[in-house]
Image (tube, rainbow, N blue to C red; front, side, top):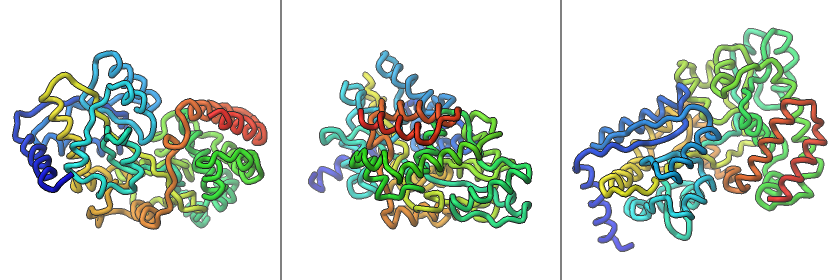
Length: 407
């Protein structure tokens, strides 16, 4: 696009903010304490711009919220904007013509140059057109530890997963739960995914998840992953909570030693006024392999038969990627920004670790980017069965490989 055309586009979007305020309903599943604080930053920014964010929070996980969102969109009751994760979750909606094309916003605001890594914008792009605004990078491969649990027991705080497992007997003997894990199915899937990278290493992970090499998937390297998952299953005995943030709270309140959870857990620690590096420790890649997957969240904009609301949708899309909003939102959320030209001098110890991994380019695509939704659902079902039964590691590995082969 020529410079003059870009300037005209930017002017059109900016000048639109002076129009009458528009109410825009935004649906999402950010309802925990830390998440609510973060989404509040987006709402504040949108309201301050002259429009009005009508919050449409849906309690529960994404697995609970997405069917509701999709049903509304396909059923003729679309919202103004809706959260989905990076990847293929909204692909069918885009292909069916339900989503607004926001390529003009992306071009006017130079998203191709400022969004990093480029895979995030690629995930929003279908047939050369942009349909979503990425807002963060979330990675699930973190181990969160209560420093006080180890200090009270006279133990060193683990620096990696192996040390964490080795300390588990002493932690259990001290009356604490070694590993906090909630009962929502996606949590066991997340833990397994984190163990894949941590235990198998990046080359083996890529061989299976990118190259779809089933010999590696069925081989000894991933046998070790499933043995690690069996160990984790035993460490989680006694962690009788449902939601992920309830499990995080077990670590915050020093009832559990640790939790495998995404970097969004950091928001809960912040709301509890815990200090990273002092009250708790965070280990990307579980301390074994400091790689992070470039998952996260993006906002899509269902088509609305209303020119004023469509203009407001595009104003919101542009706003979400601006530097100030990226900083305020991601500092509260515990996630990483999707642009590298923002001031993160206020970042805490954990965000700095994530930024170091990001700067080093130690990234892998998120599960939504490499496996179909059907395959992910089947793997999630398998993980539920594995974590809630005495299924052997070998049997679980064989069942997993059979699922992947049909992707």
